[in-house]
Length: 431
Length: 185
Image 1 (cartoon, chains in turn brown, blue):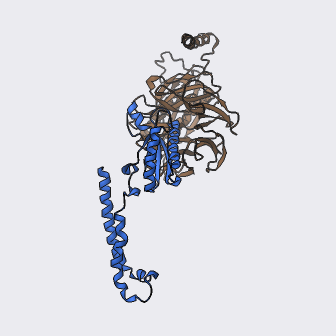
Image 2 (tube, helix red, strand yellow):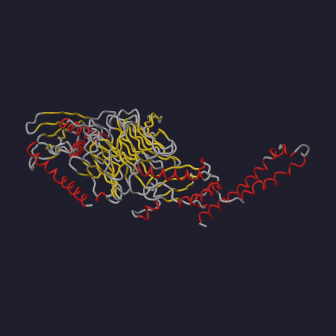
Image 3 (cartoon, rainbow over the protein chains, first blue to last red):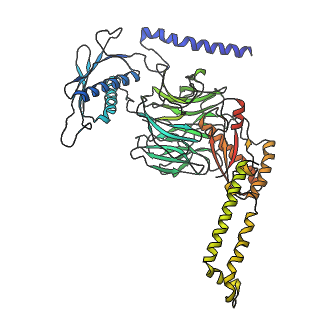
């Protein structure tokens, strides 16, 4: 007992000291936070009100909306400190500025009333030199205004950081209770909530195809589970596969030509590779244990999944032929729902500790395990990565009902994504 | 006896009375079918006009006297009981096996198709709970089959933690939600 206590003390001490040491080093060497591989440095950017050149109230509304959305996008990226005025910059030392003009609406015979486009020109400039770095011109209809702002924010993020922006990404999830859950989709900033299914069944565990054209999900027909696909362009649903028992946990291959799935028709849940048409390509696991929850590595060569062959659910990695099995988790008696990060260096998963489930991030080698959600989060489950590898969406019932939250891995901050009284579970972030 | 059973049977009897009436009417309108029945033999053409009204009630009445309407009742209504499981477990204990022997006798007599759904408590992940529910439903079906129930009579599914029987985050609710439930498919 004694030696165990000492070991624990050493573990906590090292946790407490190491980040401080890294920070202290950072002041001199510019290596700031070692464990995430990303610096904490933010870029100060000034966003000026867009000039309304013509068009009255429609143009003014458009200018206002563009400003608001671009500013929010840049803030949510975690890369920027956003200011709106030169007058009182506080501690801001602007390096860049965004400004632009709105003209509009151009009306011809075919475009009347509110359905006419405005012309928006947006510039990214250095500050205070005002060197033009990027210009984008758009002619959006009122219904395209949000997407236009997100598109420009993505361009700015990409220009300044080299990273892909996630401002046009969306999260699909399952909402409902009492044996009826429907799929919904929401923009990454919490706007544009849309319901996708209405079949009075359980609809669960959605996953986007890499190009976003389809969402694979598990649903029930007459009490039997099947894997279905929803076409995101026309809303049509088709059946992919419905074997006896479980048909769930779909994970689309990065190439888009096949999926991983857990099936139990042989009498036991096992991992399979199937085509998008529902043909089994290969069975990857053979055991009497539960083997579920597969997730491809970003290159599509390996997969991580859950097996309880040792008596408790733990994470394992195998290659796409089912060979080379190795155990990944040794800490915790219940680990499940692993998802590989877009860059491949990290894995996020859910661990059960006592009666609660928590979100954990670690290197894909199994090292540097970090619990993201403490007891205040009650149960936090079903994590999914954004394409930027920096944000994770998950479900937590910290408010008493499961809602979706977004975690920033670099800054260690959270924001709530969905609201309302119905439970929201099994989110999946689009590419 | 619960009220649901009685009201369902009242409906059933009412329905059968209606059926008798309808069949009688239909019988009146389809004399030719009866006339050409080979069993009636030849050379009795004169008597056929009175046959339908006498024979039709004899065909239908015995059905009114049969047992529960298994097709339209929930298994719980004719005595099939749910089976409960320990935390994180999908093995059957002695008590469950005893209960399943009792269930097996009833299910064999009922002769109808039954859906066994597996359930788990709210703790743990959606995905692992779906697998646990599946294992529970399968353990129950396998044991019933070993007791002689026709395998084709038993469908299985798993709802994991998505269709709880008891709400609440306490041992009482959790214990009620870890079960294999028998339902009409």
